[in-house]
Image (tube, rainbow, N blue to C red):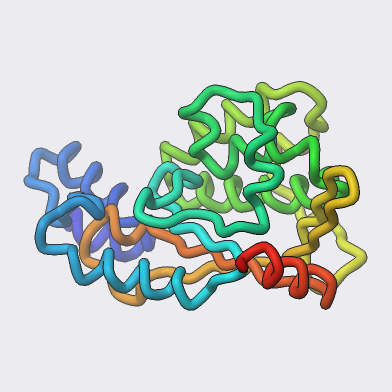
Length: 216
């Protein structure tokens, strides 16, 4: 019955485990994380994807909704702004905090209001799917100064572009990227289900040229 309820509600595997525990049963799905010995082939696949992504940035995001997989992270184009972050080390490892922290990437995103307004909807979708981690992270993000009160609620913000871009500027340095998310197709482990691969692609030819130049 518990399994049928989880299926009917289409709950994430992590929440199905919690449902089984609450009902007095052993959780049916593993939650080992990428460090598990028998997941070496998964780690290799992730590294392979990110190698093909170079010279453009890419990160593997774990269940903390923003913490990059340590084996490989953002590529050269973002290092120029990364070095200017002035924030706690644990927050600087989390992509969501980096975008919203006043002294993180936020200070270099030209279209921050529009970009961050769209990005926070990712958290709202995760909250709606029953993620307690997303709920906690949303509360942390909304505690930062300068965020509109309406961002506390899910909405469908309008955009002037068919694809949301992240436009970065630091001095004469200019870059513009849009991104894609990739997930594992049929994971049976709760930790693997939460993994996302975010790949960034140049939104204009100048960014593509600059990324190739920085990678040399």
